[in-house]
Image (cartoon, rainbow, N blue to C red; front, side):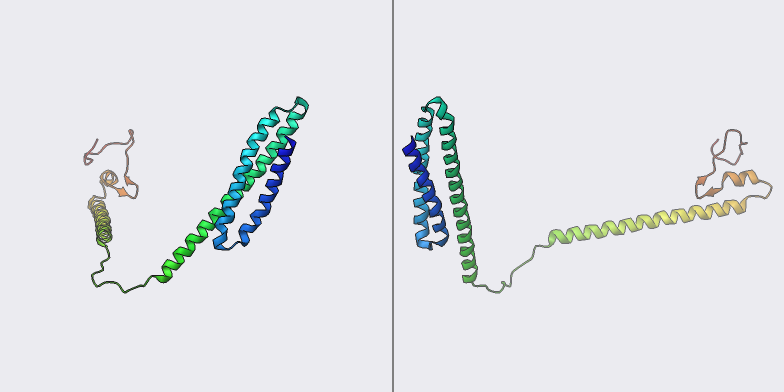
Length: 196
């Protein structure tokens, strides 16, 4: 087990050094470096499977230590795999941005055609509906105001029309800001009140 572990450990360090080449490689060689690193990682994964089998066959007093060493190597290789995928993802995004930039720069722009229309029908209908509702609310408020003015005029007429000696009738029809006065059960009723 020990020679295979040392060989795998050496491969991991080699891959770590090759990861630095990814940043400095030109576009043509970049795919070759990526493929080489991915092949090495795949080879290390197969060696790790073999190491797991061998570590389970170690004597009991060495088994736990051997499994820990194999797990550490596995973690390092997974970390390298993730780093490679992140690099590839960044490269794909950068290449896509470059393609989009080139596409925009190479596009020729022309003026709009004479038959270009802007779809505004729905917006106009919505705006006219809002204006109708606004005018309707104004009319409703104005009607309410007219009704209140009419009630105030009737109040004044009823107060003036009442005789000075007929104070009870004037009190029954006195509409103030709070509405008509309420009679208690002990107050006398008058014949002019429509409700008893």
